[in-house]
Image (tube, rainbow, N blue to C red; front, side, top):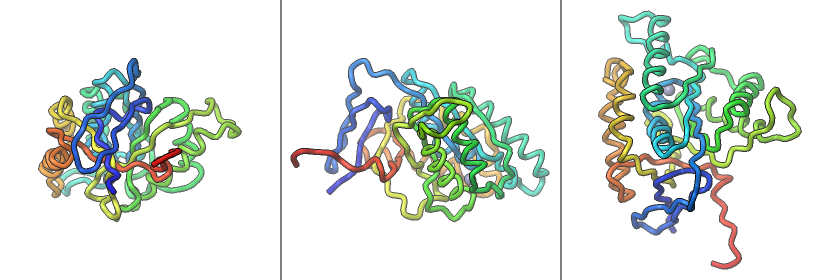
Amino acid sequence: MNRRFFAQTIGGVTALSALAGKSALAQSAPGAKPGKIMAIAAHPGDGLFTMGAALAQQIERGGSGILLSLSLGERGAPKNILVQRYGEMQREATLQATALLGAQAIFFPYPDAEIPFNEEISLRTCDAIREHKPDIIVTHWKGSWHKDHRNCHFITGDAVFYAGLATLARSAPPQPVSKLFYADNWEDAEGFVPDTYLDIETVRERWLQACNFYPMWRGETGFRYNDYYSSLSVMRGCLSGFKQAIALMSDVSERAQHSQSL
Ligand SMILES: [Zn+2]
């Protein structure tokens, strides 16, 4: 049994093809209007490196995209840069990167490494979803060694629930989210099983340029993000029959198939 989907889009109105070990192209519904995608990341680097290509692809198709960073990732500072200064550099890099992709960027003020998981942040994230009205959300998978990433996963799950809860009164009206995906992140690899491969060939160069605004992308904090994620997109492309691709994992609640026959 093969549960993989091969998609040129991940919009809510796109019909995906479930295929057994063969590459194929998804067929967009006639007249389908691309929706809005929101990436919710613990740190801006996660947002661009693991979710940025999905944002870029949605925007190129005529949709829109927004990146919500729960922190600035400032504690990843190299030894020769003060933490506060590094946070400012991360914010500036994110503004430049999202501008290049045509996406919006918003920031929550939580300290890196101290992102909480509680009602306050879940409701704040719910309010961001209600305000910006995404159709699709991409965030962290929970199988991470990093506590901020795990918390971001659970915050987003609760926020999506609250955002669509019609009886929960907030400043903005309810906003149901039609699709929830988890990103392919080397720090969130435990139990990550991709089931959706997205063709990113047409946006790959722009996405790589956007990532290059970050010193950490260039290996300046130790890990070779550039080599890892640029190679990963080629590897995921090999597996999916596209030239380059990203892999996503859909939420378990979206995997049930409703059929009157097999
Ligand atoms: Zn991170």
